[in-house]
Every structure is written in structure tokens, then in C-alpha cells.
Length: 147
Image (tube, rainbow, N blue to C red):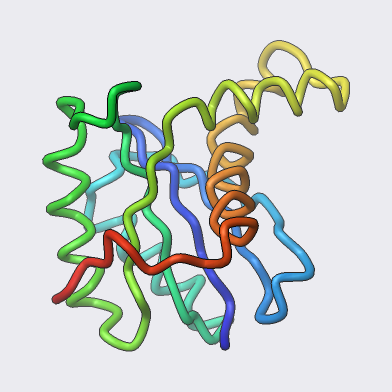
């Protein structure tokens, strides 16, 4: 087992979170500022991977409430394929991210954050929610992306 990175990709920012190898700690990281399918994001993820032994990367997939794909799903699926090629030793997993931003904002509000402080943290806290849900569900491997 290694660490797990989670991404909440967006058109302007991508939230990042990490879980340790034992899954005892899940931590939001500094968000990536830039498009969620960019080469620059791949490079930023490589930097994170150099610091850790990454076993899996969870990629938030913005499905509609009925489970169908939103307009953003196609570029995110393509990016996940690029991730699989770049990180062949890590499992690349797509995860439904429906309502994770709302949950992250509720947690931030409860923690006392408002305004810009909340907005600057919400993407990475959403990535942490994606990661927490995955761990709580027993770390399922469905929606695995192959290189």
C-alpha cells in the first residue's frame, strides 16, 4: 500500500488531497491553479508523486445527479487516460464527485471559514471528501482507467 492522491478537477483550479499509506490521515493540499486537464497539472502531480509512493490517484468525475455524464466528463476521462500512461504503477480511478463541493463548503463553514478563505480551500476540501468516501467504501476499484 502507498499513499493515495485525490483530484477535484476544474476548469480554473484543481483541488488536491492525500491519504497516507495506512489511510489514518487525509489532508487537503494546496490547490493547483490552472486547467484540470493541463500538462502543468501532470507536472505538479509528478512533483507530489516524487515525495510519496503513490498507490492510487482518484479523479473526481462530475456526473449529473442521475449518474449520466456532464459536459466536463469527456475531457476528464481523457485526462485520466493520460494519468494512467504517466503513472503506470498507480491505479487511476474515476470517482463520482457529485455534491462533494457542497459537502466541502459545509465543512469549511462549520470550521469558521467564510468568503475568500472558503473559496480558496473548497476545491482541495472537495478532493478530501472524494478520498474520504472512497476509503469509507472500502477502496473500491471500479471505474479503473487503464493506460
